[in-house]
Amino acid sequence: MDSEATPFDAGGLAAGSGARRPPWTLFRKALGEAGFRPTKTRGQNFLIDPNVHAAIVRDAGIGKDDRVLEVGAGCGFLSCHIAEACGELLTVEIDSRLAEIAQRFLAPYDNVRVLVADALAKKHALHPDLAEALQRFSPYHLVANLPYNIAAPLVAVLARSSYAPESITVLVQREVAERLSAQPGDGAWGAISARLALRYRSRLGRDVGPQLFWPRPRVESAVVHLARRDDVPAEDGLEDLERLIETAFRHPRRQLPGALEEFFGSKAEVGRVLSDLEIDPQIRPGELTRTDLIRLASSL
Image (cartoon, rainbow, N blue to C red; front, top):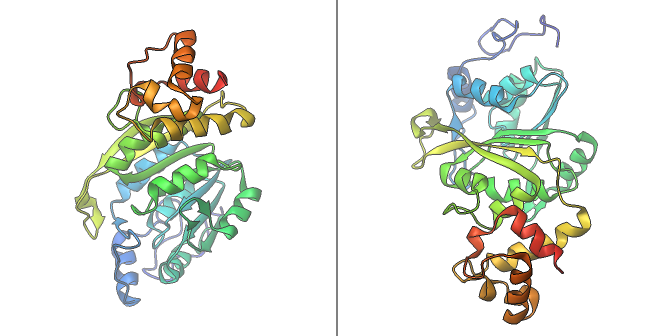
């Protein structure tokens, strides 16, 4: 972008690199002037520390050749940091009042599009406008401070879609971050962890304390990173894998013969398959590795 872009209307900030990003006080002033009050139902907790914004963008590893999707733009505080780092930014905000504020602060950037929509039309599907936009936007990376109430379902829906992001760097409730990044044997390893592991390598990132948000949440937050695998199973095998994972983690406390009986048809058949694959029948679904799951599904 041209370093001589138009300065912000609010605050008279210089438009050079870095100086283009206004401080939280200006965003807070804009919210007050609009009479905006955050609501818990929409998970509206604004990250107000610019150092953490910069760290999230830096950790995401995005560059000028990258396209980025942000869900939950809020008033655009993090969006400004992303816009400076990437080639194109598609940012989504459900609240039209916030979107209007974000558009004002993002006006100096010619690489940003703000979509006013609920990212999830329902729990297991994207909003049609967002889905249509992503068909043309791929390949892209997801970088966001996700609203707590949609974090896990949104990541799951995007990861399983035909236009899945190349990487995911999101700030979420720490409990959710632990589930998204869990590994076999972890207490948090479950259906969503296993599904993501089919497609992504994951790791837990930096912690972010509640004092860095407005309003202050009652929970801890953390960044989670997911990078697209080169060895994602073929599409025709993913359906069986998804069904296997759903069946196995429906009864996570059972040993494998009981947990997988529905998938294979009988405990005897489960026993035969486990014996052939040399998998211990006494373990539980939470101890199955990604490789185990792929081998089990392939045994069909």
